[in-house]
Structures are given as structure tokens and as C-alpha cells.
Length: 498
View 1 (cartoon, one colour):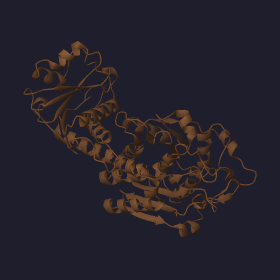
View 2 (cartoon, rainbow, N blue to C red):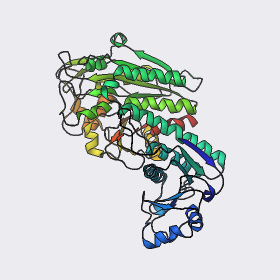
View 3 (cartoon, helix red, strand yellow):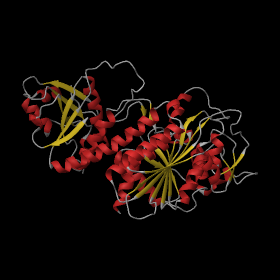
View 4 (cartoon, one colour):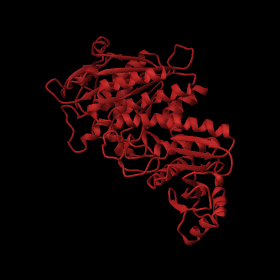
């Protein structure tokens, strides 16, 4: 889809539909909506008076304008109450409108800079949000559907009308880069497990390295043995697919130092191993590599924006399957940093491979480490599917991560990391066991990971509840969400500025 900025008047733009907004409780149309209302002889005002347009958030009303405007249709989107408008609501509303109009076979759209100037929303932020909303909201994954869709086309042109044009164009570019990176992660997570094995993940990383001039190294099983990656090797024992440890690096500064290491869980399918999961919804466990996909996708955006910072993504990748060679409850393994782990539940495997990923990040002497993982159902119990859970040893870094998420509409909530939780992980026969008691599971999982961090500033993001969605709402569609790609990019860009 081509997205462009133009200056001028929305009422003279030729498009399949123009989009204007209306606020809940407003007495009359304002801004572009007022101009379009005048050009259509009060059509919007009449519908408001009749109660057909209420302005509720994401409400879309379609008007036809034969001969009144160069555009054949007008879509009025509700933005809710004006005093409550924020940038995420703009992103959400434009996504809903784009999907609605695609369903009406509209192929070209135009809109003003929705939300700009309201409640402190900057024009560049509004333009970026409109771009992200359109791209994310129109995302589809149809790679394996052979039947053609019952529609007359796709939206292929989206025009944002406003000024200054240069500012809008720059914001559009930024929004496109972030949204397309998130969509790349969505594609990877939506792939079935037979087509997204550890080898497939490694090949995807190689393709990224080639396309975006990133540095790539993929460690095989022999290298893992040499490095002592007992966590990754242990989990991979039950699978016929060879494990991979992916190292993908973006170098934006002249320093040899790694400023940020991103560690992503790469379980390409998780049956639970010997501690096997219930069969119901096990198919969703193809997405247990969403953390790995997100950290790789983050480097796509960085390579396109080119901030002056060095970032390395580390992805331990394997399947977790039961077999005669699989890791067993009661086994003891040794992680890369030398710690021994008593494995009491083989379905708590993500933390085992992350132990090696975090140990490798420590070996790189990274200034900061952020890991991303679909780690625990307990985090979903605590926070549902609205917030990602954050756990950390450094409040300053945590605050930055949470702020970066809020700015892009990916909400993050910090949970405690009191030392008392570590008591649940004490083992009688090893340095640590891989599960705690019944309660506080998301926290004890994070406390386990902290054993491989020491004092490096670190944030663990548990995306078990936010990596996918089973319903269409705003700029999210069914399936993978791409969380937290835009958060990570936003965070790293802010760090690069300083």
C-alpha cells in the first residue's frame, strides 16, 4: 500500500473514500468534517441530528457523495470523547475504518491528520499513528488459504492531507518501518510449526542479514556443546529437529561495545515435553517463538532507521517434544554459566533455553539486556491479555521500557521481584530448580532468569498474554500481534538519542 502526504484541502482529493472524524457529545462537525459537511449540503449534520452518528470510539458511518465531492464516499469515524483522545485511539480508529472500507471494496483512501493538536498530540505523532494503524489493521495471513477472497480488491493507496509535508512524510516513513517490522514478526509467529522449525528460524535470520546488512552467526549443536549450553541442549533432546542459537547484530556506532542485547525465546513448538500439555489449544504453541521473532524483527526496523547504537539479538531456538530421548522430570542439567538446574517440569522449558541466551548476552558484556518470552500462563492469569508483564533488576531501565510501550500502545505492567520469591526455587540436589510453588509463577520464573544476569541492567518481558489475540479489535487482527516489536524499537531509538 502506498502511503503519501499531500498538502491542500481534503474536499478536493480524489479517492474511493475520504475519512473524517466526529467526537462523542460534540454539537457539530469540526475541522475536515465541517468542510466535508458543507460540501455535501449538511449530510453529516443531518445524521448527527438523527442520532445515526454518535461519535463513539471506532464507530464508522458511511455516506455516499455522488457529484458532491471528488471522493465517491465519506467515512465518519468516531473518536470517542474529545478530552479522552490519545494517540493509541487514533491508531485504533483508523485501523477499524480501513478494514471497514476494505470490506466495502474501497481501494483508495484519504484523511486529514486525525487527532493532531488535540490533548497535546503532535502532528508528526498523529501521522505516524495513522500509518501504523492502516498497515497493522489491514494485515492478513492467507499464505495457506487457496480459496480466493470474496472481495474486489485491496486498499492500495492511502493519502494523508496536511502540512508541513516534509514532517508528515518523515512520520509516515517511521510509521511504515515500525508497522512492517511488527508484521514481519506476525508472519513468523503465524507460520505452522512444520514450516517454522529452528532451521527455518535460522534461515529467516540469514535472509534478514543479507537484506539489511546485518551480521549473522548461527551456532550448531557442536558449538553449543563446546560452550556448555546445557539448557538449550537439554530441551532439544526430545526433538529430531536440530537446535539453533541465532546471533543477529546491528552495528550503528563506531564502538565495539554491545549497547543492548535482546534475547528472545525461540521454542518453535511446545508440547510441554514429557510433562505434556493438554491437547486442547496445543496448536497455539506454534507461537512459543514469538519472543525470538520479535527481537529479530526489531533489528529490521533499526537497520532501516539507522540509529547510532549497537544491538544484538540472541535467539535460542528448539522444539520441546516428548520422546525416548527427551529431558525427564528430575533430570539435572548445567547452563552455560555453570549453574546446575534440577528440572522438575519439562514444560517450564523456556527459562532453560533463556538461561543460555542470557549467559551468552553476559559474555558479550552488553550494557543492557532485555529478554522477551511467552514464558508463563501465570502472567496471563495476573494481567490477562491487555498488559505484558515486566520484571527487572533496574528501575531506570524498566521505566524507559514501560514509557516506550505506552507511547506505541503496547501496555506493560511491572511486577515485583522481592528476594523472598527466590526461596521457592531452592533445590536440595542442584543450584536451582526450574519451577517454584503453585503461586506467583510469573515472578518465580523471572527470579529464575535473574540467576543468569547478576548486576547487568535487565528487563524481562513476559508476553504470554499479549503475543496473540483471538479477536479483531483496533489495529490488532486475529493471530499474532507483533508485540513488543514497536516498543523495543521505540525504546532503542530513545536510548540512541542519549
